[in-house]
Image 1 (cartoon, rainbow, N blue to C red):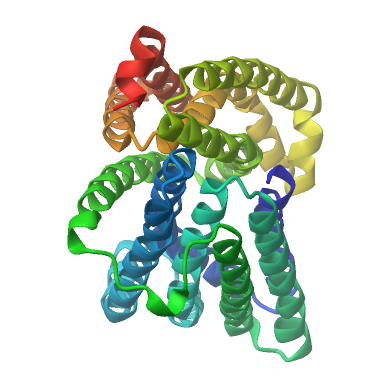
Image 2: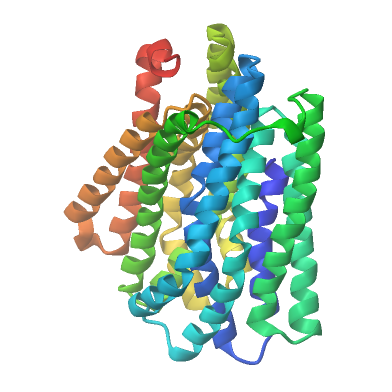
Length: 422
């Protein structure tokens, strides 16, 4: 999962490289803006994967076949409904983006082309989230790895063919992603059918739709995870918009450093996914010993990974920065704020890993409350230190990550059984 997750930022780099060789800069700006809007919409709906993983893992631990079936079917129905809503509302969404954005007309035109093509991947992208969550809940990490690698590979190849070969420009980048999403979905459905048969979940032709009463827990969990995801995205959106007020060099330097932080998060997702599946299984089976062993393992890995990433940025930070930008003033500016990036892995690793535990235990309310407290801490820290300029943004981000870890860890330390086994 770590290896396959790292292909996600690789795709972004390929998109940038391919479009960056076109005649005009507005193509690159259009892809950046359009993909940011799509990513925000899809990330806010990431609860589809998280809730499916947690509920399925608990059903798997309890050997509850009907609940395993419902984990997939209910998630798929909700995903299709949300995808339909996105397709119906997308003509309204884009004018709002244009109204909020300060980008030039050429960039907005290209971004609109990307958005209006890419949005049609919504049904496949959201269903893929559900399939990924279902496989992980059943402790099957191979199929998600295959699907992620397949999707990213198809996307990269079609990027080159459509943009450099056929000259479709921005529309080609968006079309490559749409085709990759639907190709991944087709393979994912074939793999889901195989798992369905292996788990002996019954004949697909005889299944009826899940009862409406079974959606209550799913909607409550999805609501809480949505609020959590919204607060998380607002923090990074605020950093991007507020950093832009400090000048082009600072916003570029922040983007470079945030990219490295995102790479850390993608790598840690491999451990978080394992924590989700193992926690859900332990909670479903009511196995306290397995859960405590998982905590010990994650604590050891968290400390090790935090140290490794911090050392990487400390010893190789300037070299890594030079890989992403050759502009001397941006390099110098990024190096000025590099100490914050060096500290962040040790502060942030715990929140990523503990998120996996709470998702596996389907404790959406605890995750929501933790995020709201952390978001409040971020806002208060920045309000008190904003005279420090861009340093205040990075300090607030460090406080935010530290609070996330503390507010998730403290309840587990005090009363594990009460928090998770209910």
